[in-house]
Structure formats: C-alpha cells, structure tokens
Length: 420
Image (cartoon, rainbow, N blue to C red; front, side):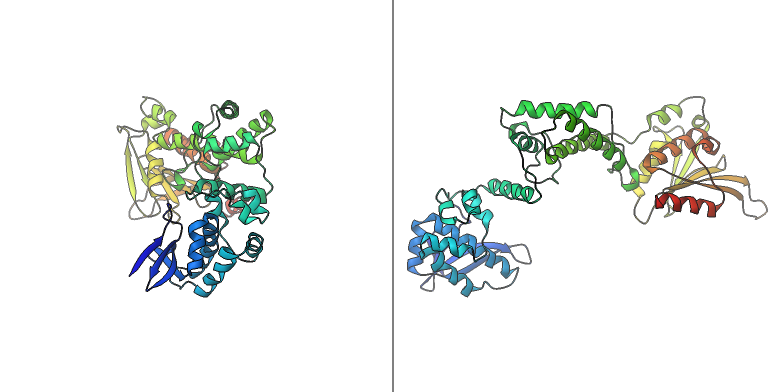
C-alpha cells in the first residue's frame, strides 16, 4: 500500500510516495516487452523530499539523471537502486558548483531539461543549475526536438539562417528531414512568409510542365525514380541560382516538396495511356485492328483485354503489372494470339524480347518462333515498347531496337551496359 506524498502538475515528473513507512521516488520510464510503461521506485530521505518540494530545478535535474538508469534496466531488468541513491545527495543537497561538476561525470537526459525550459546555451557550457533558473513544470516537447535537430545539423556543419529555418518550418521538415513535406504557412513568422513564398514560386516555375510518372514494376503507388531525380535536379539548380544565400537543407526541402507533390498527383491519376487509349477507339491504326490481347506474369496468372472494353490495352496491362509485380515476379508478357506475336518484359534485367510465330505447330509438332532481344532504358523505355506493340505489333518495334536474335551477343551487350 502506498500514498502519494508529493506530486507536481505534470504527471511525468517523478512523484514521492510513502510505502511501507518509507519515502520513495517513483517515476514512469521506458516500456516492457508488451510495450506497457514501466514504473521504477527507489528510497529517498526526508531531506531529499524537502528539496524536491521547494526546488523545481533540482527536482528536474534529478529526473534527468535517473532516466539513463531506467533506460539501462531495459524491458525487464531491475533499476540499479544503489546507482540511483548515489545521485540524491550530489544533485539535491550539494552546492550549485558541485552539481555542475557532478553533471560532467554522469549521464543525464538533456532533452528532458530543454523541454522544461532550460537555457540551452548555459547547458552547453556545463552550467546546469543556472540553466534551470527559468524551468517550468509544463513540458514543451517540440522545443527539445528542435534543439536535437539543430544539434544534428551543427554536427555536419549546417547552420540555418532565418529564411532557411522558415522554409524548413513551411514544409514541416524542421524537425525531421524524412517527413513527407507539406505546405504549412502558419508555421512561419508573418514577416518571413513572403520571402518563403517567393522561393517556392521559383521552384514551381522551374518544374512547370514536368511530371513524375508511375512505375508499376514496383507496385501501383510507385513512381519513376528517374523522373523524380530529373525534377529534383531542375528545381535545386533554379533555386540555387535565384537564392544563392540558402543552405543545402533549405534547397533540398523545396525540391522534396515539389517532387512529393508531383508524385502524389501521379498516384491519384488513373493508370492510363491517353495516346494509346485514343488509338484503340479509332477505325485505323494497329491497335484498332486488335480484338484481344493476353497478359501473363511469371506465376502463370493471365488476364484478357478486349477491344470493346472501357480502357486502353496499355493502361490495363500496366495495372496488371502494378498488381502482380514483386521481387519474385518480374517477367510479364503481352501476346496477340490471333496475330501470333508478343513481347516479353524482363524487369530484373532491363531487357525485353519480341516473339513472332514463324510456323504453327501441326501434327503434334511444336510451333516455331523467332525470339529477338533488346535492352530497355528504364520504365520509360518499357512504356514506349508496350505502347508501340499495342498500336502496331512486332513489326512496329523494329525501329525501337536494336533487336538481337543471338543470345550470346545479347548477353555481351547487357554486360557492357551494366559495366557502364
């Protein structure tokens, strides 16, 4: 049975309880194997309680030094009570200069103190007692996160100016560079917002008309890495020319914003090849003559496309790829059974094969095929091959080679490309 003797407004700051007639400090820290919060306690004296009651700064300093011991206990270990007890007198009862010296020798949680209002410049000088003069019971976790983010930048030599910081806040990437960027004008000081908007306008003008296409080889929501890199390079070059005072972090967050927005627009657009879709509804041209196509993958799954359907063959095929493509499923085929021809795409090798039936099998004999191979340059190259085949068949692919019937010759060409 325990009774709370002293507690503060914030429920996370350690409480003092009386248990079995003795005083103990109790705090929640870490989590167990089931992700439930752990509670740790260790004995204190009446003298320690008196300081904890009257001196918020010393209370918070003790908490910051106990937390590393709780972390060391892990998910199931016991708190080292002797080590915890050894913190009490040097932190709660010693002179300020001695406390400062003690904190040079022990581990402590800096971010906890910063969240409760510690002066960061004094903390960095080792003056922990003076740094806590403005301490508050309420916590501001964002303040600690921003300090950690600035520290990480300083470690790699990046120093933000006011506009740099404002741009990072605008995109929501001040704390974490991996966060998907957005547009948060309210996060920027009103005086700096017009300058931020001008930088964003520079980026928008630079990538106007550019798009980031889909890459169904990596799933229905994947986008083309080359398109992304092309847009990133274009935007960063334009922003650096127009605003040379910006640091790399600010420039990168602007290009990340432009690319992320373009990729998001692409993901929300139905997978459709507008040019091919128009072709297959006309009365002339290669695709209009095709009544059906068969799509298959490396797992033997097949899907039929019929001319009178609502969507073009290329759009249907790439949706099939997006739904089925995986690390162990990287070969897809489009076949026109009526014409006796097809193309096979090898995503694992950035290559393709066009297959033409030379002679139908008769009397139990196997059909005879001509198989020719070609290297493919990224998802754009694959899209082009599919679109051309749908419109004009294998004959139309002739100019999109070179096509090699000799397997050894093809393998040599592939190795030369990969070596480059």
